[in-house]
Length: 289
Image (cartoon, rainbow, N blue to C red; front, top):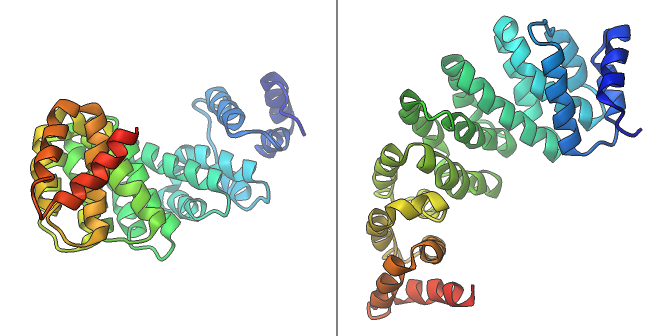
């Protein structure tokens, strides 16, 4: 069914008193349309009560649109139904539909911003979950919560994601080093995050070192490029291909933004037998960009 006008949706909801009315009108809608509809729904029910039973019904629905709407309503349940709401969030984070999983991760981040301590405690449990999609929810939520730039959040958020640094699952690692760190926490809390990256760079675990290197591949590393090079210079000595290729990736991406600093470093590495392979890989991408 095509997406109906918002006024029609809301009138039907008023008459039937059911969130399912919205879901039926969203059948087949694209993600941006669902998000617009949910924003309007939340505006209309501002101050109203959303029962966890209603959201639970949406979570159990066959339509992904229903489960997507449920993600956005969880915050309305949390004040009264904290544990139950987070149980539903855990289910949605492992949903079979990627758009629902993403909405659940965003909802986790929003809840973390508004109810930091209790949601933080539950997300620590998510970090040890057997399902990689539930584990992935943690760095995405940390990144979203970090956008508040509240200084008291910095260290707890970094400690929240720390247990996932050695997680080899591609679902998790793609959302951790280059994303939650490189495009998130390094932007929101540059000084503190850099300190933690330096600390983590002393690990021997190749996945931890991969995440550290990839954290410097994002745009947020450019303002601290000289400090980033100190860490990358050390990691470039690692003989494991998995690690040094991550260093090369970070170097060529940094080189696009700070060529005047990075290119001379790579030129010097060409004369360094321990780092020459890293320099060649980085320059190959830089010169082909």
